[in-house]
Length: 270
Image 1 (cartoon, helix red, strand yellow):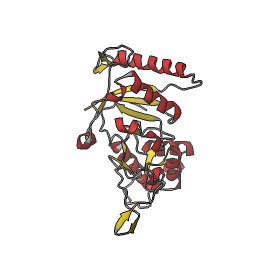
Image 2 (cartoon, rainbow, N blue to C red; image 1 turned 135 degrees about the horizontal axis):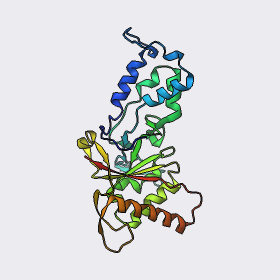
Image 3 (tube, helix red, strand yellow; image 1 turned 90 degrees about the vertical axis):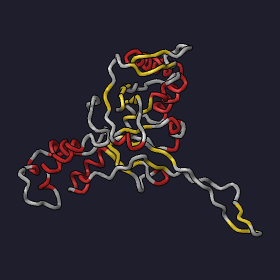
Image 4 (cartoon, rainbow, N blue to C red; image 1 turned 45 degrees about the horizontal axis):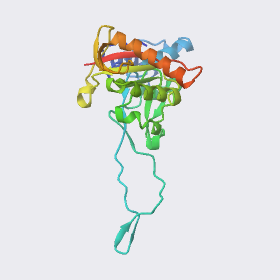
């Protein structure tokens, strides 16, 4: 998957998806008769499956969070509302900053649905399950964890997630880096890529953001995570090297074995 991209953050695959949907329109339940390609079903099965996979949405950023829960009183007694003690709390109510509709290709045919189930699944639903969840592409979609969510990750189902993203603030100190390393090693065991987001945007600005891969000479701010007692103004190249060394040192110190190191990639969010 190409990481260097200047495409829209949430619509990176929109143009490709539209073209493929048009190209495959003879497989749609509704055919308007304008499609010019009539040989899709005669292609080898493995080619058709690859085309379906390429057509599925991806490279979208999912930002999970939790709604504030208000505990209500349980019963009325003696002119007052009272609470039952020792209640078992429900899991926190999850929300996403931006919600994505399921891919329309799932409804095209049995083959397209099979592909969508192979490369993705529903996540971030009610009680952390799949009900009322959102389709997530395990191969290319991204889970961004804000600073507060890093410490609440135990409430998230991150199984199958291969790309995690954090803002630059999550890497400011060695201790913060260690929290991320431990999260990946123990809870997101299939993580293959960790994205460093410089100037991660919020709200409406994030919907229109573009991301550009950082170069080695790109200044990224002051950090103490390289092991120094004082913060240093660092460039991505030297910080990237320090981050890899910090991972190696952490894995060795903890005695972890057969741990696959994720690839660290930096992006400027504009």
